Image (cartoon, rainbow, N blue to C red):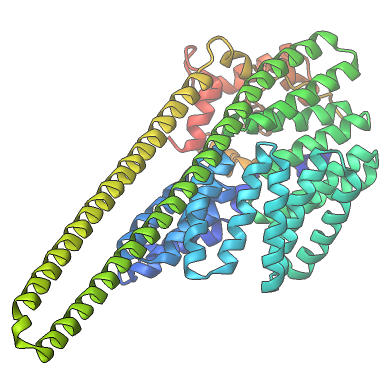
Length: 554
């Protein structure tokens, strides 16, 4: 029991880790004597740190860095901020904006010759394509990234790319190749002591061994991922491990503990609006209830699962369409740029040809006039006529040149107009995409289903007092000083009153409270009444709300 409670409380404390670096960056950002370039780098560092914690803040800090870097013409800062924003959009499930920012970042990295940044962009772009199930394109980008990382001898980045390659193989149920890549990735990350990378690999290995039916191996890797993810502050990994552990416990017929993990995962996924994790948790709860023979609850979970699955399917299709449209737009832009460059080359060639022709004619005219003058002064009229002819010819050539330049200017205006129309088209598509997303997310009649109350039924165990002390320790880790504040404010409260208060703070029902305390529901109701009396509460006041305000210090 204590081991299970400890495993669950680890997830409640996960956001305390990884905060240290962010706090130090915020302190650095507050320094007034910071140069603008350093400030840009710090903003990008903050955006990077928030990738796995809060994608909205990641985009916010990346955007601030991009704005400042553009003012400074700081190309390295521009490139990195584009990558920060792109990866954050990928994490949010917005492939079109992710690809736009990553493609822009990649172009800047190429222009300044930063091969490490270029390789990272290739890796991140591959992640976007993998997310929309364009596995062939993703694998091609991963291989290019590995090639560049190998030249640069960046073993850690190679290992990260191996993990992403393994994700593709897991999605295709190619467990043999997935395991080979994951073993190599884990070896490199362990050598480099990269906590987040090791946590990610252990998570994938846990999933792989569950697929193979190796439950003991799976449990080892999931626990390792949980411990390392806590150190790295990996919020998404936290939810993924809860679902994997819930599935593992279900397969081991430990149904009650499995349900606790899956319900906690569902709550966390709902908080962060992570639909794919919600889908996985609902699927596992449906299988759990079916395995327990509770078919009515299993059917309810299945209905929720189908509704959410249809929603995700429509979302994924929209993502694929948006990404394909962007890819086509990018190809069209490249074609237009090639055409424009070829046109400029042709125009330049014609211009130099005209200049050369005019120069040759001028030289020939000069030597001809000189020759005629030296031969006979009587031919002056003829020479004058020839000179006039040459002048007319030069004027004609000049007029032709002006005409050609006008044509070139007209072509450039046409291309500029086309480019502007192209931008307007992009803006229109983006606007339509945003509105489609708003409609999709505001599905009437379904949101209430997603927020169902989840019942927790926990049987009373032996050694209640010892379990209560363990529970109290873990409870106070989540609700810091709650019991101390309550006792200080109301010293007349007994130990049993504090137990009732703690269980009520968790919003447990009278039946659940009675089961945990080992008393009848009527006794639990009486205990709550005594507690309300000692707290001097009116009949209209809600006990849970009252205790919440006490914890806040109001």
